[in-house]
Amino acid sequence: MKKNVRDINIEDRRVLARMDFNVPLQNGRVADDSRLRAAVPTIRYLRDQGARLILCSHLGRPGGKPDEGLTLRPVANRLGELLETDIKQIDDCVGPNVINTVESLRPGDVLLLENTRFHIEEEENDESFAAQLAKPADLFVNDAFASVHRKHASTEGVAHHLPAVTGLLMDQELTTLDELRQHPQRPFAAIFGGAKAEDKIRLVARLIEHLDLVAVGGVVASTFLAAGGFFVGESEIEERSLEKARKLLEQQGEKLLLPKDVIIAKSKSSGLQHKTLAVDKIPPGWCIMDIGPETLNLYLERLADMRTIVWNGPLGCFEIPPFNEGTEVMAIGLVELNATTVVGGGETVAAIKAAGIVEGFDHVSTGGGAFLAYLENRELPAIKVLKESEK
Ligand code: 3PG
Ligand code: MG
Image (cartoon, rainbow, N blue to C red):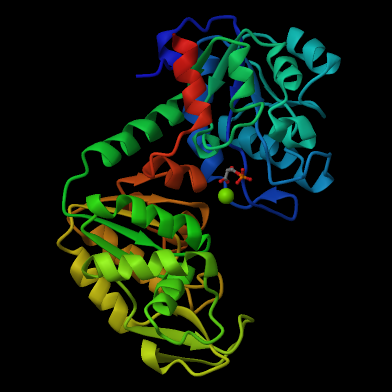
């Protein structure tokens, strides 16, 4: 087990804490604060223990230079509200100003550094940049579970320069997902939808021996349908995964649940004409927008026998009503089942929030790509370095 913040003395220490504050913004405000709420217990704990707290995070993909649209200021505002405290801010994450500001912090104070990705060295995991990040602190806490698959200066490099431990969110995510990965109660099912079908199809191929059922929607479903010989019209598919999907259908077809009926539309803009059809009736020029009602019933019926269910990726274009229906009805159906239910991924979590049933799930991960990488057992650089740091 990796050391966490509870295992060490924090009092009066200058703690650099890497959080994942990569949240959606809208008109200069935080549009979904789930990741901020998830970070609150660690921040509270560190403040209560008398730490002088330096928070850092990336936000979006500014490409290594400052970008006014991706400043962490909106995050500081929302976080301040959640913690009922004033969050100090600074317009950079390294340099003499940061050092001076940290010197003036008192125990319990919270400083939020500016977006680490405003420096190209962050994603390059530049050694001297990592050393600069570490400089004002005497302890590193990594609580950014959603970024554990990234080998960047603030997630990996910095841990070579300071004693490093995990935060409470990181611990909770790792413990839950470890259990899921090592001893899932069977029968064990996965539901995959949304985009990034390549990652998900690879994950299905990797986990298929441990899975009893895989239900699909979104681009993942369109790709499997195309691989199975169905005509999918204008639906987006993942060309690079067709071969892998074809093999899976051939070898493990009985475990794979594909849509029987779908809702299709002529384009992805709103106010569209749409209809429900069997998957073998899709006409040219149309694209799949959601799974159909017969498919939903079939999926929920088969999922009812499962003891563990993981879900990543919406089943349709949930951001354009009425194509959110498949995803929402699935969410409502899942929480009724007698299974351990685990959800991950920004879009999936947004969809279940829209359905108003986040609390019904046993675990809602803050990770998207990280959640998938963890399940797949890929090496996670941000975790590896913490383990090494312990030795
Ligand atoms: C995420 O949202 O998945 C993490 O914050 C990582 O962001 P990234 O995909 O831009 O590295
Ligand atoms: Mg992401």
